[in-house]
Amino acid sequence: MMAPRTTAGSACRRAAPLLTIALASAWLAACGTHGPSAEVVDVSAVQASNRFSNNGTEIGYSTVTPRAWVDEQALADDAPESYTVVRGDTLWDISDRFLKEPWLWPKVWNYNPQIANPHLIYPGDVLALEYVNGEASLVLTRNGEAVPMVGAATPLLGAASNVNVTRMSPRIRSESLDNAVPTIAGETIRQFLVQPRVVDLATLRNAPYILGNAEGQLMSSMGNRIYARGTLRRDQTRYGVYRQSEQLVDPVSGDVLGYEIDHVADAKLMNIGDPSTLTVISNNFETIAGDILLPSSGTPLAPLFTPRLPEIRGDGRIVSLVNAISQTGRNQVIVLNLGERSGISIGDVLAIESRGGETIDERGTGRYERVELPNTRTGVVMVFQTFDKVSYGLVMESTRPVGLNDIVTGI
Image 1 (cartoon, one colour):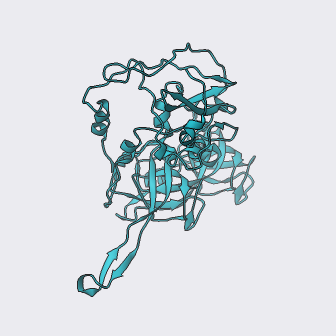
Image 2 (cartoon, one colour):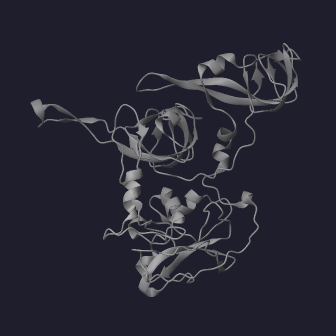
Image 3 (tube, helix red, strand yellow):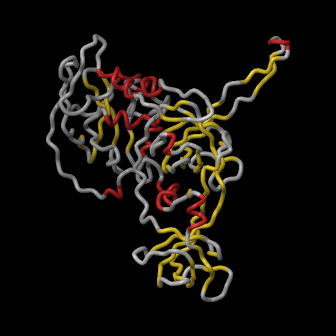
């Protein structure tokens, strides 16, 4: 493997480092058409077409797909020559330094066998370019040495045979996964990963509920003993305390999508009875009579998401802004009226658009024709939590405020 280098003759290539992809056009070719609802469609036929070279010869590979070379059109105008990862970085932020469209980073890393797992990049690692037969490709350097390939690919029939590839043996490295660079900042969404946020009406009505506390006060906080009625399990000792927040309604169909609930506190079961006894062990807000109890879902997972671009027919809407009233922006959470039943998955990246409004064409039909203006893209959202009818997403980019009923669609 060649070491990372830059030369005077590669000035234009140096302005285009890292994280780009020859297949970017295939990823971006599919834009959704607007309609009353949205669904994810199968794109396996499109993916299958990439198995053939220009002359129609099928290409095979022994272990992994060979590297993707730099496409200068996909690179940010101010992309650096190399970048040293620091603590607090996210994969999205690193990609955004180099790419105009940072959500494409999984595709590049999947096509570079040197980086076996993009999530296992650590502070201090250096991402740069190496040139192979005049083509720029991504390399990862750690402690001054290139990280060895894992199962380097060997092109078979129909693939280029003049690529210089040096096979290297894997080396054992011990590192805490807690230090690995996450996809996005975990602090922003951690509370949404561990606690349920949307329930149906039956769950809301049938859940155990708080009756009061041992002190006879209206509100309870950490350390207080509380009483609850309803079915609690002896083998489930940890419960979350929740309060109904908002009814989520589809702005297109008018259907109720679910009921958003706020996490108020955590409680430990002390005794089963009627009422049962629990102790508040932590709280975000004081608990009150009528708050419901749901089993605690455990410890939040690290936010290691792999972005993907779904193919969508139609469009969706933003139905709720978490911790905002009418507008929100970058690094804020929103709720979409697209969920698992629409084919939405964790990691899906969607465009946010605001309506274009309309204007009057005085030279049109009847000299007074109303013309709808195109929608304007205002941001990008990545889904990190899904439910049956809705999903939660983090606004990754925004060029103007994001509002209720804004459109979400394929990129």
